[in-house]
Image (cartoon, rainbow, N blue to C red):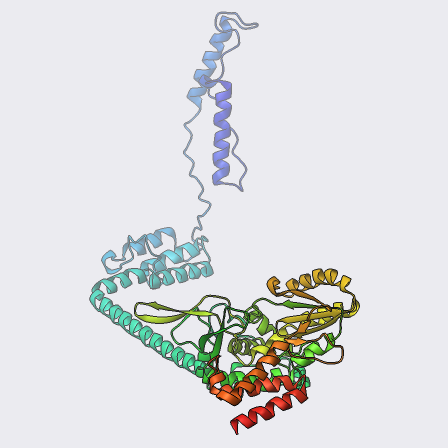
Length: 558
């Protein structure tokens, strides 16, 4: 053994001693054995310094003597650091002896590694006592360990028991689940049926008391019920905010009002009777007469709303107290008279513009929509499809020619046009009046006509109207000047065209010989009323002559 191996063996013994006896000093190292001493540095061959053959022999003799004199060492007993001796109640031998008396078949915890045995078990109690007596655990720590074990014992088999119970009662469980599912479906069906019934009742009630839809493209404002009450009251107009307000004012139930105001592109039952009449200038004019319920509603709107709104002073058509005579009078004796005609005047005033008139008066968007729908209609044609007759719209919804509300609404829509044209005429020294779609200007300077016409046409386009260029006329003082069918050449009076007066005189003269019926070449159903109308129109411009004609007609009809 070399020196380094011997030192390593010594230190290993010291470490082992310290491991078993940490509080005791380490034992002295053993003296090296003779045969374990290192050989001299030069060897037996005399290579070293100071050693020879005698030295080697002396070393061998000493080694033999040391082996003869030294007794063999006694084995030392290792000290157990956990040995309590006889200080505690039970020694390890006693614990083992008591454990040997426990009968294994009387306890269920021996060999179990999946649970912590309870304190009530005799063997477990004995083990716990040994652990406490030998200082491995405290009683509080053992109590906590057993509490965890008890909880585990209580709950560890819950899932297994549930699976066993489910496997045992699977049929009953499935039957119960199916019954619950059937009940749930039945309950949902009942609830859905109740919701449908409730919604049907709500819809029926709402249809009975409210209007939320009147057709595509016209119903988006029906939800807004905000009216400008102060503005309506200031104008003396009835306050209408909701569809029910409109229905109550018109004396109609909500369903009937919905029917009259509903907009559709194709109707089986139209609200107007359309017919054509010949125009005075040639061609045919389509008129639309509203049916009784709608005509009654329009009459109420005219009398209670439209008639209370003032129109522009330049407007003379369909205005109480004004006529063709008042429209022509400002143009008497002027050097130049200009007449313009607006093309498709009533149809060009569409539903949005009419609704805007009612909204500007202060009515709520909902009320304005209903009132505008009652006063407008689409031009329609009859179409037969699958044996059913439909009245199909062929144009945009606008003012119908034949409704009593159309003239008043046209004047209200044209107020801005009248204001702009009247301001232009005053600025340039012209007189301006309008009778429905006929615009009349007059001036003392014929050279100012051309610049005026250019501006007038621009204003007409900007206000949403179109000029009928075929009817535009510029009349000089040298020829006959007419405005709304009356002659205005004379500065102090108006007159009918000469041919009209002569025709009326000839009819009355010839009727004295042949009777009135023979003179009815136009086939008028009430020729006498027709003649009296002509005489009344003459009386507006020439009362003495009209009085003579009326006397002659009275003599003929006796």
